Length: 261
Image 1 (tube, rainbow, N blue to C red):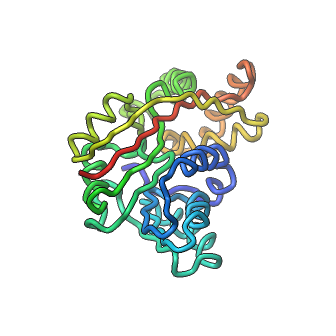
Image 2 (image 1 turned 30 degrees about the horizontal axis):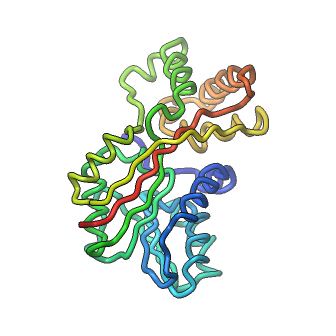
């Protein structure tokens, strides 16, 4: 069974691309400033802080499946925002809320959720009538170059036996599929679209830290030996060094907006 836990301190330090995408989404939110919002998969709370600053009279509930993430988010948010933020460990597919929120925000998370029908039904249930959802996640050809390299490397010695029954942990839906799933869950006024978000890391050191902390956590859990995990990442880093530009990641973002019917 794959772990739900993350190295939250590494994620907090390295997740600048995710924060920048989140800030872009936040700039599009139809905020009055007094809403009660859900940050769905809040991670370490970096975007949650930005959201709270945009809600001078509002509150945010941050939810994440990882206890480590919630612990780091609490350390990051509670001293500044106090009772204006609550943090809950919960699965997005089975949220413990019913008709509670004016809106839901989520960034860089939905592609980690295995069942999007359950996900969107759970989010719909958490929203008040006419509440809104604004989200961004990986979609379409997200990280296709890296994923192709990873899959090829995983079938080679000495890794192949450890990945024999492995399946990628992500769902990268296209815009049409995501819109259909939102509609089945009871959403209306749905907009869905893909955009390229090419990300270039600074150097081999940052790339070799970024892959395990942000992208390949579940892959590396398959490898029992730390030296083998380091070798796997090092080989991918060597391949990325000759890309044009070097150490680039071919991210694609699926942007979603909808309202509860």
